[in-house]
Image (cartoon, rainbow, N blue to C red; front, side, top):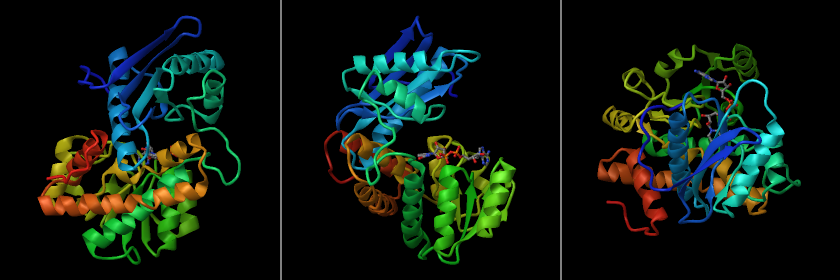
Length: 349
Ligand code: NAD
């Protein structure tokens, strides 16, 4: 993923180098000000050690902000493990990872992320209790987080459309890039709300099946970014909002589930200059971590629903403050998160 020089990091890095299993990785703890650092485990083949550590740093900081804005009693962290490629003993590897987490004594709590599964977390659980993303009893939080992520994005889109477009979703057209777990869930909620859909995915059988189910139009995966729609919902990859795509956008609102949608800080300013409202990704896609956190705290699905239902209130605060102060929304969201983490809820000027 990322490469180049290591970014500055205000947290702590815990390196893992386990000879027995061959596990190499790093646990990045960005902040424990609000509680133990919570964030998933990414298992990926990195081109270098620095690339791996840089990714962990960026992701851990993002988790601090996401957890703070979601009102969770958790700080931010992330673990990143180097995928060894070829044949390897997965059980031994994730047991070693569990031991590394246990050695931190509860400073960091893990769950699934790109490349890891419920089975992996079950293996981790054999070595430590500081893990979520396992199966739970009916009525209790846990299981697949993506429906909660989709719900949070949908509720946020409703709120942002009211504030920024002066309209509810009925009759608006939404372009959804990526119709995997989050994107498809979002599409179903949008159709129920009376929105029209244009969808795209690199997986053609997936996109065709969903188009048939929901009566959606299909477009190419790049072309969809410039579609003549009111709302764009990136639900696949990061960095889709960049200096190449911003000039093409016809949507007046960007609100989707993908992480790290802005390629750079400047792209947030570019959206603002074009008068396109941006619902910060880590704010609106927090439904998944809300579900994971609730599982860890042994809470019910009703409590998850209640907390996901509060995401639009926070978004409203961000959109209104941004308009009032003439700032881009991503900067306002970052500032609120930083103030929550530092224990001050003073007004963002
Ligand atoms: P997923 O793997 O189920 O779906 C991603 C979809 O995007 C797939 O259908 C894939 O084929 C498609 N895709 C990949 N490249 C594409 C491209 N260039 N153009 C169009 N489609 C493309 O993943 P997901 O769980 O739905 O997550 C989607 C995004 O949301 C990711 O960025 C993820 O980090 C983020 N996210 C997910 C959750 C969650 O609860 N699953 C929570 C927070 C954030």
